[in-house]
Image (cartoon, rainbow, N blue to C red; front, top):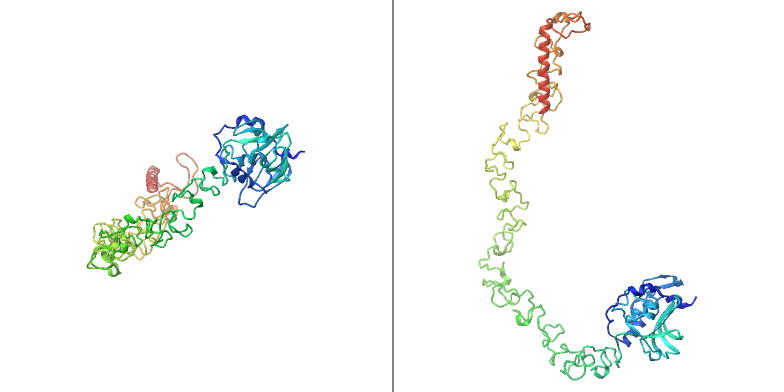
Length: 526
C-alpha cells in the first residue's frame, strides 16, 4: 500500500457541511514556516493535528494507516498539520487538537486558499493531491517546484512528521493560503522592510519614544537621556540623575508612587512613607504613618494606650494596658462588648438562664419568674408560685426530693407524698401510698370489694367482701349447697357463686361488676 494512503480523505460527504468562515489571520510566509517546523519529530497521528513547542513526548504510531494505532498526546496527519500551520479556518493554538479538512477538501475546494501555477509556488505554499481515495499534502519551504524541494510534512506512520528533501510528482497541484503578506519583511513582524524602523527586529507597533527614527525594539537608549536602556530606571522617560527614592528600581521621573504604597504621590498624605490605607485619624492632613500623635490627644503614640482614639486621661479599668476609649472587652472576659451580655461583669460562659439577653452575672432574676434571686427558692428554675412542698427552703421546681422522704424524685414511686418504704403491691410503678388501685385489677380502691386482691370480675362474697377475699367453708359462710337450681341445671360441686337468696345475690353481683368495669375503663383512659 502506498504510504500516501495514510492521508486519505476523511470523506467527500463532509465537504458540503464545512462552514465558510471569515478569513484566517494575516500571516507572513516566515511565520507559517516557523509554526510548521514545530511539528518535526512528532509522530504521525491519523485524523489529528496537534503538537507542542516545549514537549518532548512525541508519541508513536504503529500499524498501517488508516488501520493504525497511536499512543501519546501529540502528533498529526498530513492535512491536520497543514491546516494547523496555515491557521485555517481560524487562529488556533498548535497544542489544540483539530482536524478541519482532508486532502479531498484541499484538492477540491477553496475555503481559505486557492490554486496557483506550480512554478509560482513560494515559501509556505502547499502541494496536494487526492485521487481514488488516496491523497497527501505538505508544506513547501524551498527548492524547485518541478523537481526537488525542502518540505515539512507528516509523512506516514513509519516516518512521523519530518522536514527534508523530496521530489514532487506531476499529480500534485500548488495551493496558496489566503491573507498572506507578500512583501519584504526580514523580521516577519508584518511591517514592510521599507517602512520598518527596526527591519531586523520584530516591532509591529513601530514605537519610537525619542523620535530619533530608530524604533525602541532596536534602540539602546529609548528616551535619549544618555543612559542605556539596560541600566536606565526610566527607560522611556528622561532621567539622567536616575534618582530612585523608594529603591524599587523605578526612577522618580517615571514613578508616580515614590514610597510604593499604591497611592499616587499627588494624593499621598505621607508621600515618603508607605501608607496604603491613607489613614489620618485626627484629620490633620498628615497620615498616621508619618504622624507622631495620630489621635491628637497630646499623648505621643508610643505612650498612648489608645493611640487612635482620644484618651487624654488614659483610663484603663481592667488594667490590661488598653484604654477604655478603645477597649472592645471592658470586663476582660474574652467576650467583646458588642456580644457580651454583661459588659461590666466578667462572664466568659455568657450564661443567660431566662434568655432575656442579660447574663446571669448581672441579672438579679436569673430565671425571669419575677422573684429576685436573693429570695427565690429556685433562682435558676422559673416558679412564680415558689412552691416548697417539704419546706426545706428549696423549691419544688429545683428540689430532687420534693416530699423530703429521702428518696429522689426520679426513683420515688410517690414523689409528692412521703413514703420511705416505697411499697408497691401491684408493681405498677405507683406506690401504695398514692395508688388508687392497689391490686391493679382496674377497679378503684373506693369501690373494689377486694381492694388488695385482684378481682376484676368483682364476684360477691360474704357481706361486703368479694369472693376473692372471703374465707371459710360453705357451711360457715352460708353459701348454698350444690344442688338443683330453679332451672334444674346441674351445679358444680365446688363453691357456689350465689348468696342464699338468688333474688338478692344476682343484682348485687351485677352492680359490682358494672362498677368494676367503669373503674377499669377510667383507669386505662388516664
